Amino acid sequence: MSVDQSTTPRRPPIPRKKKPARRSMLPALKRIAALGWPLAVALALLLAGLATADWADRRSAAAPSSNRALLDKGDTAKVIADVSGAVARVFTYAYTDPAATERAAATVLTGRAASQYASLFGQVKAQAPVQQLALTTKVSRAGLSRLTRDGRTAVLVVFLDQTATRKGKAAGPPIAAQLVVTARHDDHGWRISDLRAA
Amino acid sequence: MTALAGTVRTTRWLRPAGYVLIAAAAVYLVVSLWAVIRADAGAGDDLAGRRDELTRTAVRQITQLNTVDPQRADLDLAHWLEISTGPFHDALKQDMAAARATFAKQNAPARGRVTALAVTALDADAGEATVIASVRVFLSTPGAGTEQRKRYQVGMERAGGGWKVKTLTALAPGGRS
Image 1 (tube, each protein chain N blue to C red):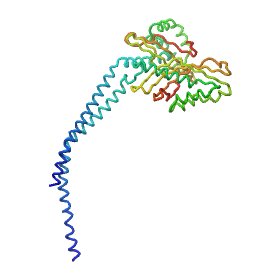
Image 2: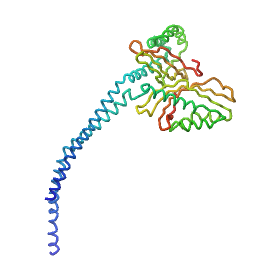
Image 3: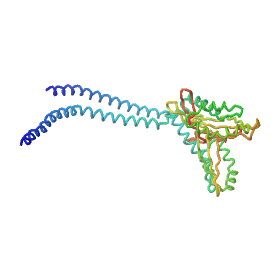
Image 4: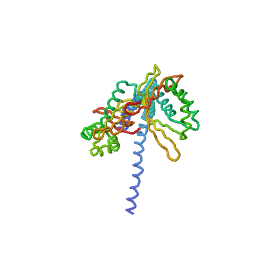
């Protein structure tokens, strides 16, 4: 009995606990409701703003003027000259001075272009000492297809004339090669990041 | 009582905060709209549009000039005359008979594909431009196909509302053209 008596008065505290909870919930709800509409409006405006910003991005990326090739005359001439020089340097090789080519490749190539270059040029490097090979590459024509708005990425078409000499004697007629070159501008100037035979 | 006063104080503080949020979001929306308008204004850059139009036309025409189906060589040749102008047009016209004979002899269709192209000069006012293009030509000979690589410097001229090929120079290595 005494156990029963002690358990029954213990039960009421549960509803008693609920009452203060309800009392504090109501103002809390009111508070949220009071803040609610400005918050909802702000959120709606924010979403509209985000959607509009995305629209602007897509629109500006699709606009012809996002490609600055030929539009910025100075930049266009500069990137063509720099990248042409870089391509000619890395594809010119003398068995007497392989270090010069390696130095050029190390400074001028970056990222994927380094491995692409290795596969394009590896054979020449392997055969050069044995056959006393020298390869001279000249850029016959080069043009800029794409220059990003920030002036940091460029895509060029480069036509090469390559002449090989074996033991100082011309080894056949000059050979034509066509490349699509992607270049990136960093603190060191234009560097080749992608090489592809066209 | 203290709890209620606290709530009122918080609400008083939160409401202006809500307005500030609205203002900030509205400013962001306006800035975004401005960016859309500016992106549109950029599209009004005439030279960019003309460069891209020239690029599209040059790719199409150089592809056509490297594509021949001996079955319908006459049609192809007639089309070449349509997309050419000036010296190249005259040369084509002159060589018409010889070209026809050559195509009649070969029975392999040639299909050209421009693999790279860049506009190297563009004078939009004079309607003159120069492009360089790298082309691969597939000859579907019976049994096996072969691929030829070509490269051109192409002079383009604006004639009759569109760009046409004025000169077509195959660039041989070593400066021989």
